[in-house]
Amino acid sequence: MHPRPQDRLLSVALALAVATSLAACGATATTTPAQEEARQQIVNYVEAFNKAGSHFHSAPTAQQLRTAIGEIASTVPPAQFRASYERFLGGLRGELAGFAAVERAERIHNATLIKKAELAKLKQAAIASSALAEAGGVLKKCQQDNYSC
Image 1 (cartoon, rainbow, N blue to C red):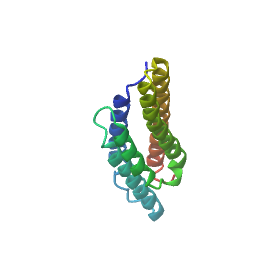
Image 2: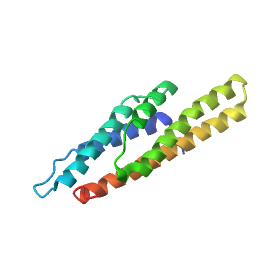
Image 3: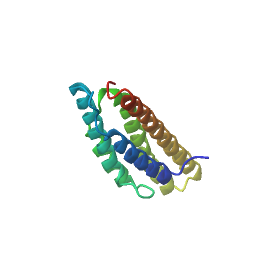
């Protein structure tokens, strides 16, 4: 069973909210300046994702997705998150392209193309979700290492 796009995006927003609260946990007395800098960069990065995810309260429109992509693309990820950032952004861009493909197929009333385009959108959504989960794993490891990541 494939997740519905609105469910995936709501779970993305929730996951990012949880990640922010975890990343925002204060540094300990043994935190070095480099660790504090890394922590702050990660907090800022996760907060930018939260802001972008705040647009999704139901099934996203192409415009909402376009806005989120623009906001996310304007962020500079910490080095540890670069790979997952690129995959996540690629998944969102692919999903946005899927909107256009669905619209084209609907204009010509081609049920087969509509189904293919919807499946392609779901595949891109899964890529974005996977990348987000990967970023969550990186965040957790960084937190466990007191931001020595």
